[in-house]
Length: 347
Image (cartoon, rainbow, N blue to C red; front, side, top):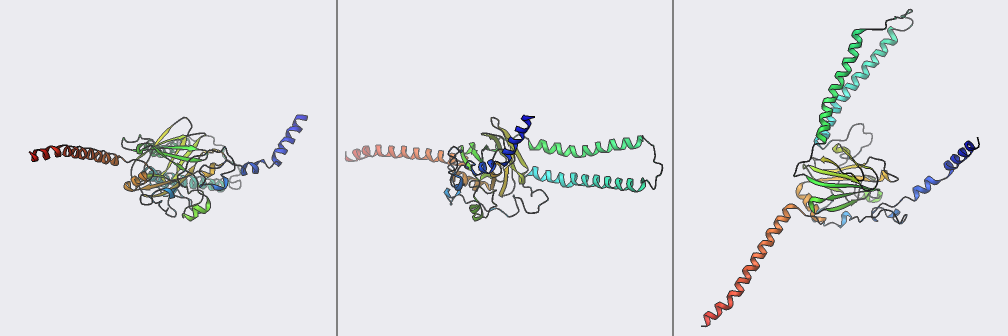
């Protein structure tokens, strides 16, 4: 009996101890001093990463796009999915609106109708002596076959959609490696010089100044070209995270020690928001995702602004270097031949 009393006393002490509020005040700072200045000095052992602020990029090459209100973000009193900007998203929303919702509505109305029939037709006043029927072969066949047909109607397009979401990326797809950290995101571009962008949530005042929703806006966005397939390589550096972008119908877990792959293709220029969708610690709710989709030429400018390389630039630089070498060789030849020509003229 004594150990039960001790257990209750211990539980009561834990409930009354303000440890939760103390722990919340002492959360480790998000990396990037500019992204979260108030929490920068809380914990010296907090993860730290270099975050290049968007204002540090050459404005002649890149200026962050302003989001469109209600597009790529949650809205007040919204009851539907966000407007979809990817092919899989549009198909998934069509399945939901044209197949799933009508089936659910019909089933609910049918069951409600049966309940009313039972309440009225089979009440005690109408049936003083209830029926003792225990089997009805026809009804049993019907209530077996119809659900099977309903499941087939749902399964065929659903399996097709699932298969499309995990088709391998084409060879010319842009590769972006996404790494989830506690509690921020890193985006690497191995096809463009392997530079990395560190993305932290913006404080409320900075988010409002930029005209972006608080707790969704970030200092450095993930940027991809419009209408181009992007091979997303997603992993976690510490615990399991999940990269989710509702407007593109995209969600994939970031698991430490493992790289998950999926293709992301967004067909409309704009700014789209998401969040980590796997409970990953104290700041799980404060590691948003912002994806900016640009025309290919502007995407290339953004890559150059971040010190990356573009495939066309490499060829141009190579041709320029070869031309410079040929011009230098030609100048050397002309210089060597000049004294000989002068000597011949003197003779």
